[in-house]
Structures are given as C-alpha cells and as structure tokens.
Length: 155
Image: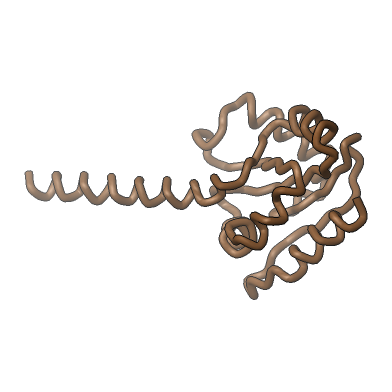
C-alpha cells in the first residue's frame, strides 16, 4: 500500500512540474485566433507575430520558448506586437479538435514549408512582412532578436 501511495505522489508531482513548465509564457498575451489578432492589430496599429510550434514534440521549439520567449528582453518587445501562437501538437489532448483545424488552416497559408519553430510577421492586412525559421542547439537567440527588431523598425 505504501508503494502505491508513493507512486501516486510521484505521478502527481511530475504532473504539477510539467504544468508549471507549460505556463512559462503566461506573462505574454498569446492569442490563438488569427481573426481576433487581425482585429487587434488594426485597432492597435501593431504587427502580428505568428509563432509556429509543436509544443509536445519539437525540441528546438521548447528551447526557443525558454531561451527567447521567456526572457525579459522579449517581453519588452512583445508589447509592440500582437502575438499569436499556432501549436501543432501530436498529442490529441493538448488543444481542442476545433483549434487544431483552425491551426491547420493558418499553417497551410503561412507555414507551408512545415518548419518548426517558425516566426512569421504579418501586417494588419495579414500580408507577410518577414519570416524566420528554425533554432539550433547552440541556443543563440541573436537572429531572433534581430528579426523582431527589423520587423519593428520597418513597420
């Protein structure tokens, strides 16, 4: 009985730590609906930053999340964007089937090459104004900061 109880406690603690890991980007206002993002971009006169991720399978996506998106430096720049996360998980319990269908439409239009992670900047008319794909195991975010800076300078 003690072994079963210990096993249960371990499972619960791992689940809690996994949930805490997923909540890292909660300081940022990530939308999941491109139509909503377009309305917000029109109202705020900000560019849209699409982030294509495979949250439960893409190792570079997980590293980019930690090294780039979860930094104070990005958080400051994020205020000048309408942020949209397009997640394409392999597990069926990560997002709803309805959300997955919406995401597939956005992927087919703005990430047809299928690269993950992928950043795509759009104007308020949903035209592409920049794109940056990939993240290496060297974990250097210079390209990503240069990309968001260039989008902001040219918008």
